Length: 178
Image (cartoon, rainbow, N blue to C red; front, side):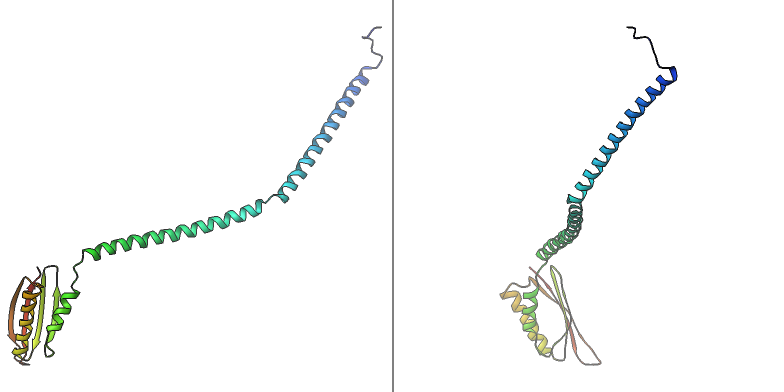
C-alpha cells in the first residue's frame, strides 16, 4: 500500500504532533521534578546527618586557641629575648659588691659617707668626720686593702678640707681598680 496517503486532515496531524511533544515534555518535566525532589531530599538528609556544624564549631575553637597561643608565644619569645639581653648585660657588668663590703667594714663609726662613686676603673669616696684620727684609720684600712688584697692599684688623697661652720673634716679619696 501506499504510505504516502494521509487520511487525516492537515490540522489533525499538527495537533497529533503537538500532543506527542506535550506528552514528552510532560514526562520530561515530571522526571526532572522528581530528580530535583530526590536530590533536594538527599542534600537535606546529608546536611542534617553530616557533622558540618560540629566541624565548624571545632574549627572556630581551634582558631581561637591558636590565636591565643600565638599571642602567648609572642610574649614568651619577647620575654626570653629580654632575659638574654639582661643576662648579657649582667655578665659584662663589673661586680662591686665585694669591694663595697670591704670598704664599709673599714669605715669607723664616726665617719659620715657623703658620696660613693664606682666605675669600671675608678673608685671615689667623699667622707666627713669630726676627727682626723678616724680619717687616718680609714686611709690606713684602704691602704691595707690595696696592699694585701690587691683591691686597688693606686690610691690618691684628692683633698682635705675643713668646714668652718661645723669644724668637720671633708676628705676625698680616689682609687683605681687593677
